Image (cartoon, rainbow, N blue to C red; front, side, top):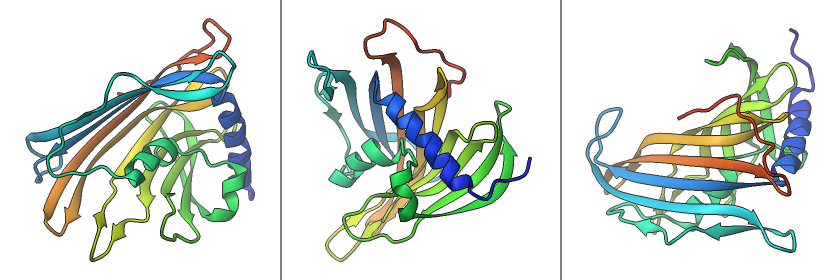
Length: 230
């Protein structure tokens, strides 16, 4: 199949339909961030953990909102979670490349690849045109289904890394998997296991985010899974 010259625009249009569809769903988001001793691909012993559960729900008036389930648990020792970390969890790890984002990013096709699930995909590299202080952007790769231009997987890092005399705020590489709900692909699982090189010493940070129990607002059950990654 020949690569279309306007691949990025087709992907963005498809992502916009996915965004609008996802806004009609409730779901539960579970975030676990583990601090491990550095060394080796998998890291060492667990030194601390942060955990939170949020539900994205609709109010009786039909307004979409987030609700924290219980209290977050923060047992991290050396790692400190910042506003940027939580912005990334909300906006970058489940990043949707919608048309309003097109002018912010450079894109380039990196060939094609068949996923482990047998989906024939274009590889679309996406990087910010500019990154300034206060911004949070995605820098990485999309796996784009050749059949309908849906993003089925993304891999990358949130930028910019923040390094100054007063502050070190480093962010890990991650992979986000999606699953098909009716005709749209929504994020279902994010995984990261990366060693962050702070001046005070390396810290391995392992993160999982699960987006579960997708339910269309006003419907008892309209969700079907075609793919699950754990």
